[in-house]
Length: 231
Image 1: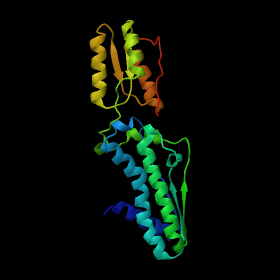
Image 2: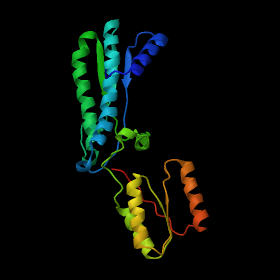
Image 3: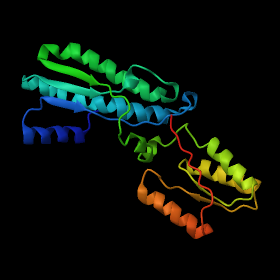
Image 4: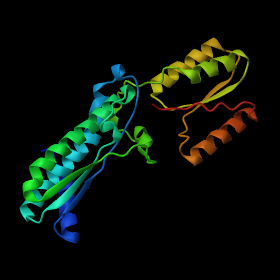
């Protein structure tokens, strides 16, 4: 069954400690943005599975119990402003949040007779760690269509290497894509020393490690280029 044993155990434990559950908050979110036409099934399965499937697991686990207790209650499902306005690079994310909104509106009608209310929370830009979800993406969903394929960062690296600079490149991506980019640079600019580091710059200790590696390798930093962005 889709309802996991772990979910049932969590519900059992909540009831053991607090008694019948009357307030249920379903919040789950992961995201990666990129050209929608390059999306893979893994991109769809990952985002839909967490963002919509997480809510489904919550309601499937708790609604039958809430009805059986007969005490009423309220459910809050977290969607997003992306449940109202879809952006191309965020297409799958928006689709998952549209689904949460649609399910919530339907549940509100269906559960009213049990005195169970349903709301949908649609935040805009909030300071959360959702951007880090790409680093914890399960192995079975790693076949993403959003790959390291150059862009501004590679263009800057080419220009600096052409001028004779030694370079430390930092970036995250699939190993085969990174290997391809490094091989390309080393072939085009054989006189430059090119070093790669895969630090996650959202983590201070990894950023510090990148600086230490650069100093150890080259002795100093003459040019710093900060180039990062998500859509």
